[in-house]
Image (cartoon, rainbow, N blue to C red; front, side, top):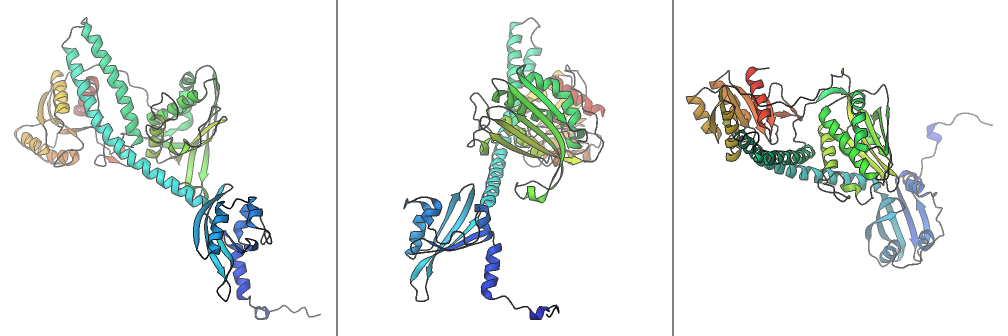
Length: 508
């Protein structure tokens, strides 16, 4: 017996038919042929495994046998008969949990007669899912831009209401009955402002103060508060992995995320239940990110929030992060939209899984950072307006907002110069020496940042305070204030304006 190893030259070259069969056996699709009786004459392709089939296992069976139907209107049967009439057919077909793009061609003999049908089905389930994610992201981005614009205009109106209400209260004695009514107005403005802030968070146009923080420490601080939100009939369990890393986020906004999700969970468990919060470090690889649009591979801190509530109906799931969309009576539809905006602004990712009648899990992924966590901020005590002195130049194109802010500052003891446009501000600054410029971010003729730089050439010691209902890239870089930029969000109270002006002028 000859045991001499055979060289590659002795190995016969595969035939064209063998090459074709090799390619088809690895093709992530299904290819088949049927005769004029719709009986399978071949079935190939790696996609058969997804259907639980082997190569040529269908040989001899009819389409009606495989799909277990004799209905001539059944889509695959109907289209195969069209192909037998000489018509190429292309269609999408849902089979099981998979979606297929199907192409049928008449199968002709050498003489040109139609002997059967050649079919090719490509599994497009993942492509379809990614397309839906892209469409949702595009839809949310468009709605976000609209929401940001509405919130900006609405904040201007709230600023006027707040300012004139506080000025009116200054003219009333402490025992005047009208003071109680005006306090109700301010409370209503505060509630309206919270709704606007939710819109701004969704639109990712809120000014944030991110810091390196420990998610675990933040959750420990919030546990008792979250339990009060849930009520006594809902058990709260926290499993915080001790090695959970740090993230860079705004603690106040992260608190709002947790509060909104906890509140949603409470509403989903009217008869009581359990809410579980877990943290851990995770690695999202390219296999995961390829299936989740816009997510970057890397290390993340995962916050998982699971309730045992009624769950979310499948038809609601694709829309739950859209503003004003709600599947629950009495809801505003802003809670989850706010959550989505905050997480996106923190460069994170949120994913939801729900089964009706069993509960819902929200998974929040925030990029992990390797920096020491900073102490969490304490809540500032409510201050009272304090008088001051100095020349303040206000530049605001909204007449009502400008007039309100000017009157508030005059009541606080400041000398005020008013300008509705940047060119008017430049003329006033040429004749006067302002100590402080208060300017809106978005102005006609030039941006607030450009105006500030132009005026500081004339008055190098002048300070600047930006005021706006939202901010754009002129003073925000990747969602946070540039170093040295002072900002006050509309609407603001007289106490907040007083404190911020004094802080900027003193340089503290």
